[in-house]
Amino acid sequence: MVPDDRKYTQEHEWVQVDGDIGTFGVTDHAAGELGDIVFVELPGVGDEFSQGDTVGTIESVKAVADLFLPVSGEIVEINEAAVDSPEMVNSGPLDDGWLVKVKLSDPSEIENLLDAQAYQDLLGG
Image 1 (cartoon, rainbow, N blue to C red):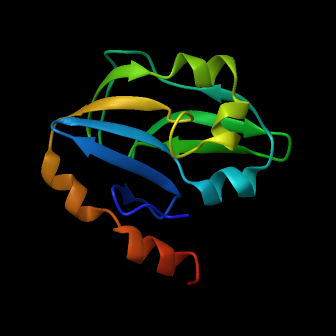
Image 2: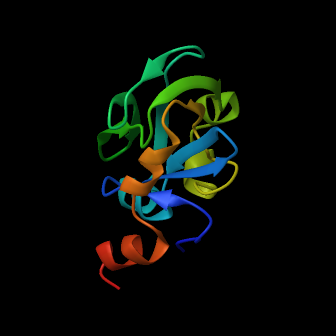
């Protein structure tokens, strides 16, 4: 499932922009590939990052993966529920399992990301 209301990275993350706030998470594909997610490490509110920076890790029973922020900006909210119950990322990676909200410092960076069709093509169809 690749909703067309957000942009995607080649590292299987998504960002959904509303005004100057981007909600960030991992794709359904990434959650499926990782398997049962047991731990999520996220940055703190107020931390600032550039596009592509590592902002945390996601750990499953199979692997540990870095999380790369798709846009530059300041972290304005983290999903405490996902930190407390990492399995939420498996059950709803595109909605309740979002990870952080970021105030975009350069909204034009969105244009560097994949749209839904390009991401679907990346997945092979």
